[in-house]
Image 1 (cartoon, one colour):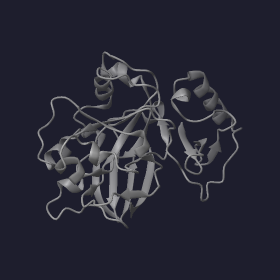
Image 2 (image 1 turned 90 degrees about the horizontal axis):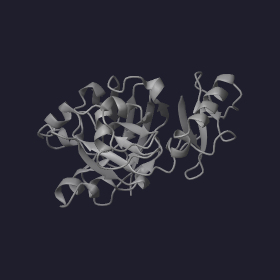
Image 3 (image 1 turned 30 degrees about the horizontal axis):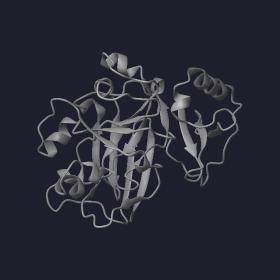
Image 4 (image 1 turned 120 degrees about the vertical axis):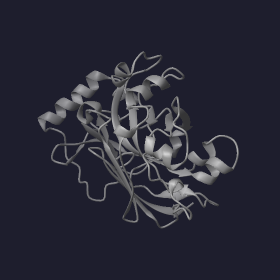
Length: 285
């Protein structure tokens, strides 16, 4: 299934994208698309049954804003330097264990919402990422194979980053990762059964029509199952939590000087096979 949330920010309604590309209203069937729904197999079964029956009312998609596909996210765990080619382009050693950092849930916006360039920023960067959405409470998982059974689905995440704040201003990475609007998510949450192998997905990102990133999750240093298993050793993952699994090569930081960092007015477009597309116009904060 392709689940999404549509409507004005803060007042989105749950919906489903059917096989014909029609947006179907789920608001009479479920309260929202959140951890509570993702953890309840019976509720998801009702959604599947209603979708198959064709009884869900259609929504007019013209001009309808698409919001983040998951509501009330508890936490966003991010994996740094998780692609071989990305590590090489930044001159970093291949990590022996996944590098973890966090993003606040209030950085999440819809897939086509405006992204704000922070005041004083000169090094705002792009990062297309595969986002994993957790569907079952996960703690101390024992294997990558087991961990994949805890994944509800996948989405596109844009891990927008301010490199000066992140690297040159002291402390940890938080200052460069948690600026307002720095985690567009969606358009859809695609359930794990529909995605299949998460290590066989192509990711692409362009800026002003020029392709900057074109990679595949096959290049991940730590595959999705390993990542979920690893994170569960250090923190409990709850339904609706999100893991951003890293970005392929092609970020502005990896370019020769002068590096083509983002500016107000730039247009960034992202896509991942089977997970849809994002488009953001940047604006000054």
